Amino acid sequence: MADRPSPWSGPSHPDPAQPDHRPGAEPTAQPQYEFAGAPGQYPDYSGPAGSQPPYGVPGHQYGAPAYGTPPALGEQPAPRRNTIGIIALVVAVLGAIFSVVSGWAALGWILLPFGFILGLVGLFMSGRSKKTAIAAVIVSIIGTIMAMAFFVTVIGDAVDEAFDGEDVTVSRSGSTDSDGSADSVAAGSSTSGDEVGTRDNPAAIGDVLSAGDWEVVVNSFTRNATDQVMAANSFNDPPPAGSQYALVNLTATYVGEGSGHADFLDTAFVTDAGNVIRGYDNPAVVPEPLEGELYKGASATGNIDFAIPEGESGLLRLELEMFGGEVFVAVE
Image (tube, rainbow, N blue to C red; front, side, top):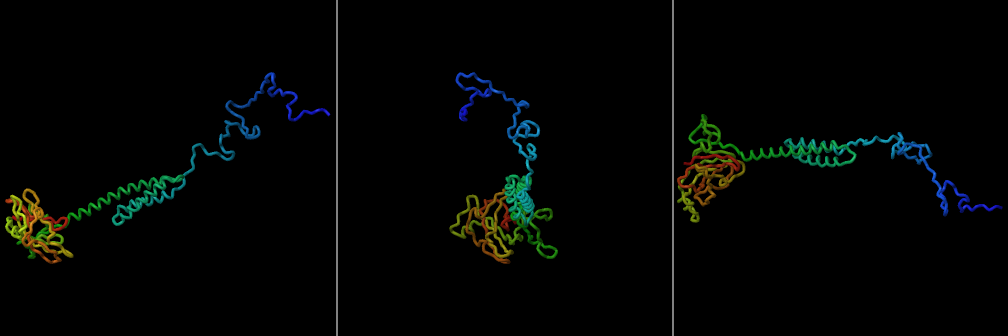
């Protein structure tokens, strides 16, 4: 039996298509592999030869899925509805409306920040429409500005109303209406072309001054009452040099609800030069001071002192309300 070559040994004869690596062997030319295609194209080894068009041939997209129509380049899926943004917009609109309506402003001031926060949440939700969320944020900001303006206006009106006070009514002494009652005119109103109770045309001693909870009558004015004041209390300090104590005698009647204190009436002496002098500038114990708590219909009569410059003339100013009710009285 003839010897057969071992399967583990090389071929008995060299393959001319393979290089011969034996020592001293001549190098064998390598076969050339050519691809019949356009320059820059490469064969497709993903399947049997010719089953798919080579790369670059129309109909084939690199990286495209094997089946189905690929999406157009740059095309994005349509965003979904933003429910949070819609809710935020509704809340912001309601807040902006209520914030400028009297009686509902507090509710609007609560809704506006909620609309703003919900708008921010909807703005950062991925895959959702941003239009309603952006609109909610903008409406919340505009509504807040409107609410602030409304708040400032309301507070300003309230402060003006509180500080304006009520008009003072002056019942002129020695003058009566056709029905026999005292002739009454409002301080600041026009009587024969002149305003009553102002610095230019002050009320007179004996006139009844009415405003708010009080009716006050100036009974008398004593320019030089230094001796009376010093005799009222041995601890009183003398008036400043060049000044003297003056006494104003008032009768105050309380006509409001509850009770009021006569010694809380605000009085001052205003010089012709415009200087304002108050009793607490140089406090002293006066004889028969104006004081006491009064209920409706009760009256108190007493004195108020001022240290006024000698020879300085002026007017008495009374404020019959905490804020307003100002009237001037001639005391010379």
